[in-house]
Length: 315
Length: 299
Image (cartoon, rainbow over all chains, first blue to last red; front, side, top):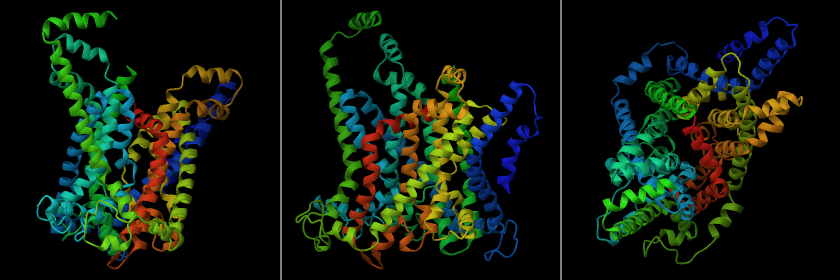
């Protein structure tokens, strides 16, 4: 349905255009027709598998559990009365914000350190630092899970050798939250590193030379040259990472599966548990739709940053 | 040259002790390497521990004596069992099939669309380009439930091919976005020269744009490969039987039976599953990073 609408809209001018006699007209018509045909598969993918499912999700979220009756916004209001749901909201926010801050700081430090290295060694170090980001998180989290294992924890063995008491990594709510954030930072920090590194490389050397002539110290250079030049890329990366981290599923699902007592449950895992595992598709759809307003706000800011950035580059 | 001279000229009176600068720099470099070493250790511990565990026998894993960080009697038994018994090879093959199909579909769709959007302006093309980027920002966890229903209605539930259907939603938008950037950077003079020589648009795409934008195509291909190889929530939600599963879900479901965790085999399986992306990045990292950062920094 949505698919069909999207498809016809851009096609109208091409189809309606009268058969022109001039070759120029014909060329223009053929060109836009061809262009439209070339974008058809893309429109099919976006329309059929993103736009349509989105509206379908809204429809689903307004049905009762057995999907036989229209219940309006009951699912949403039901969720708002549930303590578990509010816990999920706060945990998702805390989880995303703290993980992104840590990733941004680690990425910033690493990018600076790498940038200071001679070009020859830089590639090798960068390659090693990218490993966490290269391994699919669903796979690398298995290793973390094993290292956090209650009876065979490799970390607890290390703690034991220095005389510290063992830590119930995934059994205690506080530690489980920490573990989930830690794994997320581990996975995401390299992404910030390469984005910042690219941004650092694009800052013209003359600016630093000028700052050096003015007698700027290292910190002043960072404050008045590097940060302003990188501001846009930092905000794009942070917002993008907020979206990805906020909507994360893999790490929580494998590491804690939301436990203990739903204390690490985030939107995605909660939606999965409610919608797929408990079979309440409408309620699950409403849970994941609750993510949308927040994600949309982030997305608008990312888009604004990207367009501003491309204008700067074009100017 | 002249700037360099000015710099030193102006710099000397400000800093009397030239020696201290170089000493400072040396300390900064040592600090840099220490920071790097710390983070390299932090970043490489999980894959390292994967390797260590995968080389241990189940008896050695279960014993609580000695350090878990070293292998006393390395064995390849886990790998042998993984590759000869159980469903691991099926998962691997399924992952390969799904990934190859997804990458092929993604590249065809995104190259065609990017060419049209970058070069053949038509009604709504600008809006569509923005829409493509917005679609990229839609996470898979937002739409997996409606897609679950759609996949079910199409009769593709618990079918490997449902992955080929849904993965393009994750790969096509960003691949198109990368390609639009690369195609837009190709000078217009090349098109004009081709048009004068009588090439049509498809010939132009095939003979000029694709060869010139090869680094971008490579970057988009690696992106599509990474995403479809590592995708987790869709296979988790839509695939239930072993013969249909892909690696990301297969390892967990097949090697964990109730309370028995075959950690040696899980880690061996995880390491083998991580190997294809690691190899791809080892050889093609520069192309990918160039494409990715260009997509983000240049828009």
